Image (cartoon, rainbow, N blue to C red; front, side, top):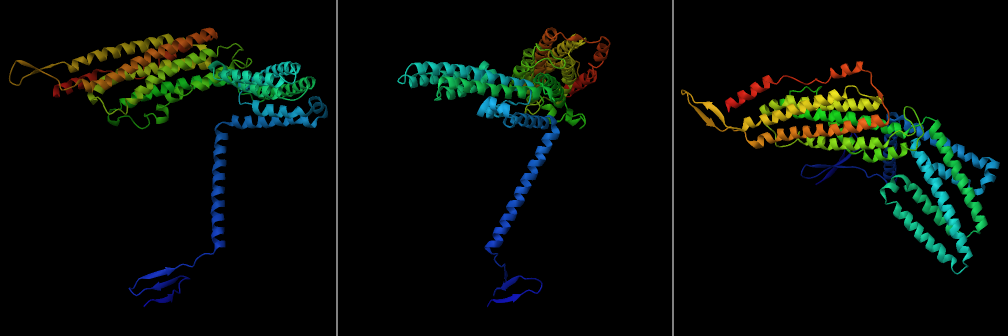
Length: 498
């Protein structure tokens, strides 16, 4: 029979059953306690999420302080434009349409000067063109009588809105005038269907255009004279960074592939972020195009003139992406299941590393040319060295046929020789041949990058680099050119063992 006992060490009740087992009795909490515990958990979770959000926001601000400066500039512009409400002469001049100036600042203010100018022009031109067209359509409709007035207005709204919406699908229009087409549709529809008389409609359009001009001019002045961020400089820096990442990815992939049994030290290995730097090049096309369009509208600033050939940067970016696709295929060789024997890798490693090293030197020199806006005095020599290394690689590929041909072995105790077929199969050599072919293809695509950079240097009139620096650049091109005699001897010994 079960009996109850109370433990003296606490407030816990236990029930001892007849079979000797015991069961504790926990007093049930009331509904108020459960609600309080739930609220405490909810508040703790909310505080934790807010804390994580603030930490993330802090990291974003520390990583790029220009974002914080942009937010302060936006707040400053809105504060200044709000003075239109508090200044009686300005408010009476624009009437109740002062709100359009505030709305213009909100939608037009962008991070870079070029983007702000582009949106400002789109808004002013779209509003002005739509306003005059709507004014003309409204006047024609009012002269046609009450019977045909709604038909004319409805047909004009349908036709122009349809045409403007379709224009947003055209790539060239979408890249530069997408926002302007949207403003045109909005303004024309609002003005055309309004019920005002023609004279009052003209006054209303004049006030709105005036407030929009006030807002756009204020945005341009703030972005241009207070800690400006130029789209041209951003595009210039982006191309230079992508070139450095491309060179790092090329070196890292080849060195990682020829890491013989983990012989490379941890300090010599490239991190995954550097190996995959080519992906930044592949994903930067949209950014480059938008920055180039914005940079064309910016005034002369820094080292860049008003007519700086920004479109040439797009050609350089396209050439780099063509090279990055080959590096992506090269990177896939590292994790491929089909790997060549180690002695074949050793036989090809030196010449492959030489090609990758010389190719990356060419890319780095091109990045230096763009960064300094000076013509390189050693680029021709570096390209020649890269071509020479590629020729050596082609010769090594041809020499691989000797590894696949029948080898003559001396029979023991006899002076006669017997031909025997090597055990090296063609499939074992293909991985290295594929990698070597990709390196040759990459070198040819790098020459395309050289041509586009030279075109930029000629059009932008880059200055010539000092000749005394050419010798220093030439001294750094043969960093990885070890002798191949030891590796060839090891290969021959391996064949003899076979």
